[in-house]
Image (tube, rainbow, N blue to C red):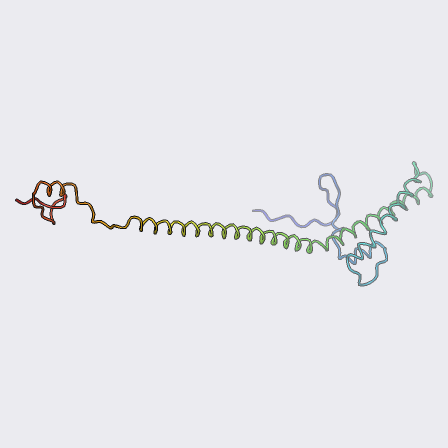
Length: 194
């Protein structure tokens, strides 16, 4: 098979949208510092995310205010400076959103761990339910076997041979005719003599 293509560096297009590899995820503290939002040193990702979340609406409203005043035609230096301020403000909002994304990405391992714990707990509960079902089936089977054994004992005692077994029909006919029957031969229980 052919070798994989080399990694992409710089801007690239996917389905008509331009992406840039320089915006790859950064370490969260670097991403937060790039926003210009003051975050205390040694803060947790949650604190950084809160700071960014507080800064985003303010910066977004500033961007909206600048865009409302945007001139239709860029005819003077003042208009050009205004457009540059709008672009800088837009970039600042993008950087804050990117910093929030990077902070949230730090929670992915915790989310995966919690999902795994939840799945394992569900499996444990499912196995406990199956074990309880098997245990109840085993107990029912033991009761049925014990009941059947008791019924067999009762049936055996009811059928105890108190009398001698009935003779074979051919032997009984031969004895009734007064013939002597030899005990060891023949399918009918003996051989007639005589």
